[in-house]
Length: 400
Ligand SMILES: Cc1cc2nc3c(=O)[nH]c(=O)nc-3n(C[C@H](O)[C@H](O)[C@H](O)COP(=O)(O)OP(=O)(O)OC[C@H]3O[C@@H](n4cnc5c(N)ncnc54)[C@H](O)[C@@H]3O)c2cc1C
Image (cartoon, rainbow, N blue to C red):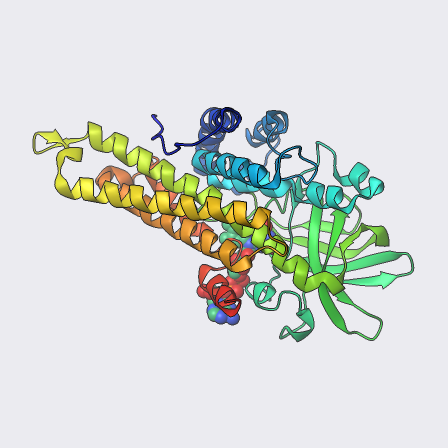
């Protein structure tokens, strides 16, 4: 598969990182992502003999996962450019695996940001697979709308932490949508804190080892898109952790909810630019091969018009995504409306471009023998992932 050269101004170092990430995406993420997508049983995706584990092992050796680390030697804006390149390649390879690998780093990142050697030792290790449980069975979009003011959220939280001497005790459950939920060894848990009078505050963020007594998992979720991304419920039955595992206290709730969402949405933007680019490339290649009316279909005007629209939308989404990452690397607090604009634009672009690619493939596009229908399913999930796009839009408009 030839890559359409989108880039005009990469430094030698940036081009080298991009090429490394692209090789990993092409040789590992794409073939494994397709194989996992075709498995009818989501339990098989995480079985001991699944190729998923090799993806994690090879990712650890790749040398790109600490790029968003504050201790990186790069200037923030250079780091943001590199993050944009790497995330796009990961999404180009396989969106579900890209998300799984990205979120697997979250406890590690929070541990490092805390500067606490005990947390770095416990959660910063190579083997940690992380997750970000925030949504709950009764509170999906509510977790966004009431971010930082959980005391105003209608209904009781499904998961709370209570202080008990030198510990916190966690009780309740998070939703079936937690990415890496059934395989994670550690959580960056965002949940409400309840005081002794029953008052709710937060969210607070805790680092929680998930191999402790009292932690239980649901079954891996069976869904139509991003099937390589393991998801499932996590139940906490009086799980006791030291108070030092609290990394973002409830008083910081509004700030931490915004910062994390801004980061996550900006990362989603770059990842789903990669999905759009993958669909565009597949469509161009197919249009050059498929002959109808005695000519390759790329010779037909309507096919050309469609390809140009796909190219234009993908380039526009990429420009916004990269601008967002670079802008937010130098902005504190991060511009959340901009991050949301990037996520919504890139995911809707990925969906539209994948849909147009499917049309160019004709009947073949509908079959599982060709790869575009998977991109369409993966992109569809992204419009709900990290917040439904319409709810994110309502939030962003409130910040203008
Ligand atoms: C692929 C994927 C990965 C995910 N990963 C994670 C993860 O790692 N961790 C995690 O905790 N969660 C994760 N999620 C969950 C995701 O954040 C939620 O699915 C999302 O926030 C929506 O919540 P919900 O599914 O409960 O839908 P609901 O909140 O029930 O929304 C249903 C519908 O109502 C609309 N709606 C709801 N409230 C409002 C409102 N106030 N105003 C207007 N419209 C409204 C929504 O737009 C939507 O159309 C993931 C989801 C997906 C699909």
